[in-house]
Amino acid sequence: MSQVSPKNRFSNRALPWLVPITLLVVWQLAANLGWLSVRVLPAPYNIAKAAWALAASGELWTHLVVSSRRALTGFAIGGGAGLLLGLATGSFRKIETLLDTTLQMLRNIPPLALIPLIILWFGIDETAKVFLVSIGVFFPVYLNTFHGIRSVDPALIEMAKSYGLSGWSLYRDVILPGALANILVGVRFALGFMWVLLIVAETISATEGIGYMTMNAREFLLTDIVLVGILLYALLGKLADVAARALERAWLRWHPNYQPGA
Amino acid sequence: MNNHPNETAAVAASAPASGTALHIADVVKRYGEREVLKQISLDIAPGEFVAIVGRSGCGKSTLLRLIAALESYQSGVLHYDGDASDSRHDTRIMFQDSRLLPWKRVLDNVALGLPRDAKDNAQRVLGEVGLADRGREWPTRLSGGQRQRVALARALVHKPRLLLLDEPLGALDALTRIEMHTLIERLWREHGFTALLVTHDVGEAIALADRVVLIDEGRITLDLRIDLPRPRARGSAAFAALEERVLAEVLKQHGGVPAANPQQPGEEPGDHSLRRTVDQVRWAV
Image (cartoon, rainbow over the protein chains, first blue to last red):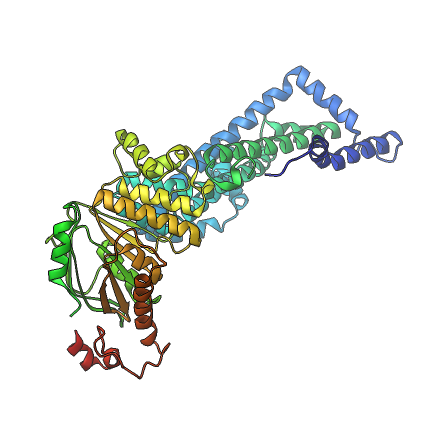
C-alpha cells in the first residue's frame, strides 16, 4: 500500500472532472456568444433551468418513477430467469444439452428486432416495455452465470468433495461463490442493456416516462427538455453501475481486487 | 519384492494405534493405453510415515490420488484397515496448492465440512499450526507457507487416521519448508496418524519418513528404512549417506551415472537394467 499525500489525493479526485467542466464552460460560452443556435443546443444554464422547472412542477418525478419501475420490473424478471436458467444449465449437463442450443439461437436475435412482434402480442402498454427489457437483460445474466458455474476451479471442487461436501453444501460453499464474480459481470452488462431497451421502448409509444417526456418535447421543439431527458438517462445508467459496483464490493470482499488498499 | 511385512509390523507395535493400515497389492492404473502404475504393491503400518519419491511423471502422485479415492484403478487391491473402501472417511489429503476457498475466511476454511458448532475445534487446530490469530483473515492475505499451514489444519481438524501429502511443500522457499517439516513431524507424533508424503525432494523424504519408497516409471524400485533418530540433523554423515544412496538410485535409472554398469548387485532393487523388457519386469515383480 502506497502513501498518498493529501495534495495528490485532491488532484486524483479532481482530475477526472477537469475535462467535463472545461467542456461545460466552453459550451456555455459558445451559447452566450451566439455560436450555437438554441434550437441545436441550448446553453447548460438553460438546461438546468428546464430541469429545475420540471422538478418543481413534479412532472420530472412522475416520469422518473414510471421509467424506473419499468426498468426494475424488467430487470427482475429477465435477470431472475437468466440467473435460474444459467444455474440450471451450468450445473446439470442434461439441462445444458436440452436447452443451450435453443438459447444460443435465441441469443443471436437482437431484442430490438422483436419490437414488431412484441407490439403485435402485447400492444403498446406496460407489458410490452417490461417484456422488451426482460428479454434484453436475460442473455447477459444467463451467459455469464453459465460461464461462471463452468469456470469454477475444478481443483477446489475436488478438494471440497474429498472433504465431505456434496449436494447443497458443495453448491453453497464452493460453486455459487466461485461463480459470483462472473454473475456480477453479467448483472453489470444487463443493467446497461436495461436502460438502452427502456429508452427504445418508451420512445416508440408511451404516455409516461422519460422517453415519453423527451419525444413529447421534440414535438414542440423544446430542445432543452430533450437534453434533460438524455442527461437523466446518463445519470440513471451511472447510478445502476454504481449499484452494481457496490454489490461487487460487498459480495467479493474476499477478492484481492476488491480489497481496500489492494 | 518390496514389501517388508516383518519390519512394518515392528513399527506398528511402537506407533500409536490411531493410524490406518494400508495394504496395496498389484495395483494397476492406466490412462488409455499408457500404464501409469504397473502392479504396485506396498504395505504401510498404522502410524507409519512413508515418503514416496521419484521424478515427475513417475506415477507417485497418481498412487496418492488412488489412495485418496480421487481416481479409480483398473486392477489390484487397495485395503484400508482390511476394508476395500475408506468407509469411515478417515483419509484426508493435502494438495500441492493449498486449495483454500478464497471466499471463506481462514477459520471457515479450516471448519469446511464440519458441523456448525465445531468452530472451537477449528480454532484450536488453527492454534496448533501457529495461526491462532489469523482466523479472521482472507486466505489471499496469507503467505504461501501460511496457506499450507491452514490447509494442514483443515486436514487435521477431521482427525484423519491417514494423511496424504501430495508435494505440499513443493512451492515453498527453503526456510519455510524446514519450518513445515518440524511442524508436520510434531503433529504426526502427537496425532499418531499414518502419513504418506509424495515429494521429489529426497532430503525432505529422509528428514521426515520412516521409510522412503522410490517409484520409477510406475513401479517401486527401492524401499528403504530410515532408522535415524528423530529429530534428524540434515548435516549428519548418516543422513548424507542415505540421501546419496537414494539419489544415486534415482539418477542411475536414467543414465545420470553410468547406468550400464550394475556394479552394486547387493543394492535393492538392484536389477534396474532388467527393467526394459516386459518379461523381465514380470519376473522382477
